[in-house]
Length: 149
Image: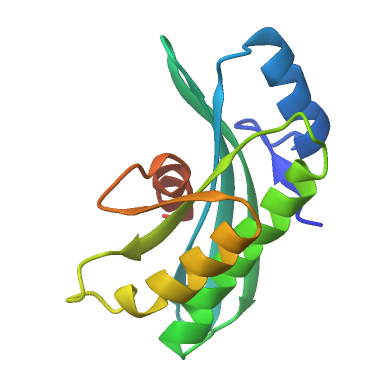
């Protein structure tokens, strides 16, 4: 399983952390998203679990991993889907946790990521997850994008 950390680098158990947040803030929205980028000989992935509070903003925990550079864009982007669904399923195994997956793919067919929308969204929907794609709500992928730079 991915190793998640808070903003100061402390390792966090994402299930217990999420349950504690939900207990303190019953109306919290939970979003999961992954972003990636390639640099020289590496591809970096950042997966974020974002907690959106109705009145007071968002905070998140995250996981970072580096792999040898993935040159094929489809493969790199598909791995984003796999990582998000992996943690979403882990959290969903606790029946109390409800969440949405934010995918960093675009509905606009001018963007390459549009090619993944139907298959990635279809897979996540078939597992019972609500999916958000660009240009709509991008809470977790915005956090992952920020952390990946």
